[in-house]
Length: 83
Image: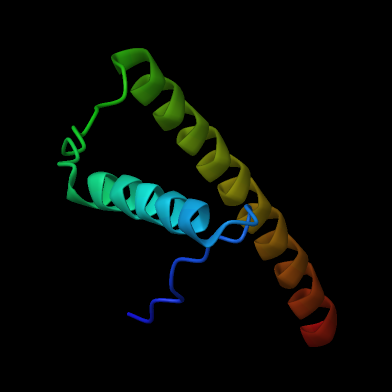
């Protein structure tokens, strides 16, 4: 990890800038050392699950209908070529 360094140039006084940099560094350390709560996995509701499955069924039916149309078109084309 590359650290760009802590820079404080807000004040005209070097001492004030050093104190500001130290305060920022302490805040950064405090944040880095804090223990994060682990993520708790959630489950979708029953209604959401049913809705998702219904949508999948509808999409599958649409694709199945398209395939039937394509099959009929290819069959007609093959009949014209053969016939």
